[in-house]
Image (cartoon, rainbow, N blue to C red):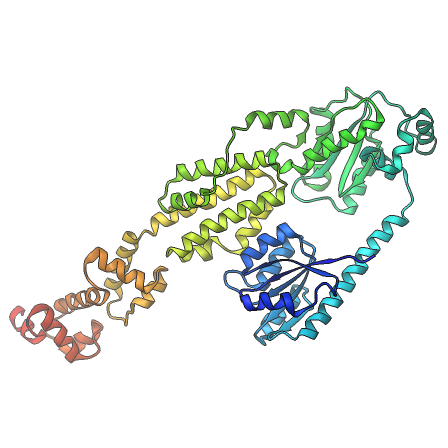
Length: 520
C-alpha cells in the first residue's frame, strides 16, 4: 500500500512558492501539495485547517518568522515535520532550528536534488510510522474491551452477535456481559483542558472496574467509553459527579462526561454512542457544562437567537474599534458567537475562524498607522492563548477582551493626544538634535504622517515648531548677561552661532545682541 504525504509551503517570496510547485515532482515522491501561505500568520491558520504532514517554511518572514511558527505549531501539539529554508548562513537561526528539533535545514538558492533527498527521507520515516500503526492494529486480538468497543460503535466485527439469543450467549460465555439488558446507554469521558495520557486512562479504567455501574468500559480515540445497563441510573448528578470528582482528585483536571441516548436493543447501541460522540465533538459550544446530555442540546437550541455573520462584519469591527464604539464591538461579537453556535463546527475550525477575523481586524488597524499594535496584540503569544481556550464562551471572552483593550489603547493614542506628547517632548529635549524620523519611531507613526498631523493641528511645520521652542528658550536665556551668545546658541540646539543669529532675527526682527541690549 502507498500513502500520499500532505505537503504545505510557507514563504513570503511568490517566486519561491511558485518554484517549489514545479521544482520537485511531488507525485513521483508520493506527496501532494495541499496549500501555501505567504506569511507566518496565514500559515498558522492553514496548518490548523489542513493538517499537513510536512511543512516547508522560510525562516525569514514578516510578522512571524519560520522559527516562531514552528514553536507555535509544536506547542499546539500538531504532529508534522518541517524543512526550513533560509537565505542566510546564520548560525543562530540554525541553532534555533535545531532547538526546535528541526533536522532539515536548506539554504537558498534551493538545490533541487538536496530538497528531493530530504523529502524522500521524511516520507520514508512517515511511511514506516503509518505502516507500524496499521500493522499494530491488525495484530491486536479481540479482547473484552475491544469487543465492547465494537459493540458500542456498531462495528462489523460485532454484528454477528447483536441480533440473536445465540449471539448473546456467545458474548456472555466469552466476555461475561450478562446479556440481554433492559436498556443500554453509552457515556464518554475526557478531561477538559488536555486529553488523557496512556497512564491516566489505565488508572481510570482500573477505577471503573471497581465500581459496579461502570464495569463495562472501552477506549476509543483517547476517550473512555462506558456502557450503562440501568435505565434509571442518575444521569443528572450524583453518580456522574462522583466520577468527575474522583478524576479531579487523581489528576487535578476537570472531567467532562457526555451521555448518549438510551436504547432498548443492543443492535441500536451505536445510536447511543453516536449521540454521546456528537456531544463530545461539539463540547466546545457548551460553555462550562461538564455533563452533557440530550437536555443540553435542547437548551442550546432554545437559546439560539438566529444571529448571523455578515460579510462586512470584519470591516464593521475594524471601524468600531477605531472609533472606540465598545457597545458595537460587543454587539458584533455576540452575532459571531451566535453564528458559531448555529454552525455545528468543531473547536479547531471555530478557533481558526476567530483567528481569521482577529487577524483581519488587526491587519487593517496596523495599516492605518497603529504600528505599535503589531508588537502588543499580533504576536505568537496571542495565538497560543487563543488556541488554549477550552470552550466557545472563553474564546469569545478572550477576543472581546483583546478588542476592547485595543479600543482603549487607540483612544489614548489618538493623534490629538499624541501631538500633545510630541510638543511636550520638544519642550524638554529642544537642546538635542531632534529629527522628525526619530519622533515618528518614538511615538509609533511614520514621519510623513506625523508631519502632516502637526501641520494640520498647528498650521506649522515640524521645523518651524522646533525653532519656535528653541528661540523662546534662547529669549529667556538672553536676560542673563553672563551667558555668551554662542553658549546660548549651543544650549538651545543651534550649534552654529551665525545660524542662530539669523533665525533669531527672522523670528523677532532684531539680533540676539540687540534684544539683550533692549531687555537688560
